[in-house]
Length: 177
Image (cartoon, rainbow, N blue to C red; front, top):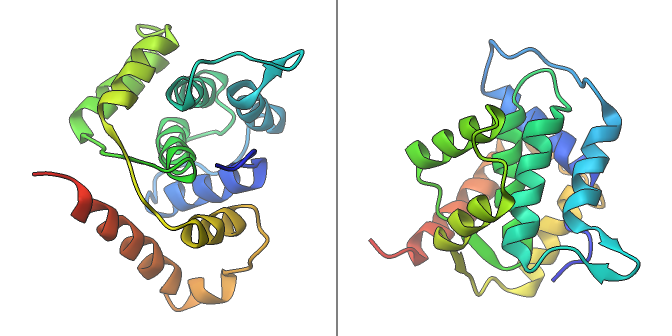
């Protein structure tokens, strides 16, 4: 859907959001270059040829890159998860996050027990569903994360959380029990 749905800045925003709910997390960036490197690796091509089969492989590469390159002091696995959620969302897919499973997968990636992106990609395929989100809604989210729309005034009143919760609850309605 979007050529570059996530930017370095949008991943930093998502990381900030992740740490906002964890008072014990240490804030900071270990390596700025690895944030962009994670994005480039997931969306890259070599000499005009796609390196990954589909959006699920690209998402798996994004997860593996953020977890393994460890660009942040703390919260890398959570940032990888929320980044992958939005990466899929911007491509028209919702990710049904099964908490126990995804925690295990992220820890296994971090511990080097899952090195093959195909294993992660298969899990993503199994737990994702194509959504019929309207292009205007996707464009709005895309512009927020690419800092084209400044929502900082809404953060003061908690409106940003309400918007995100509304989007997530609408997506949940589409999942079968």
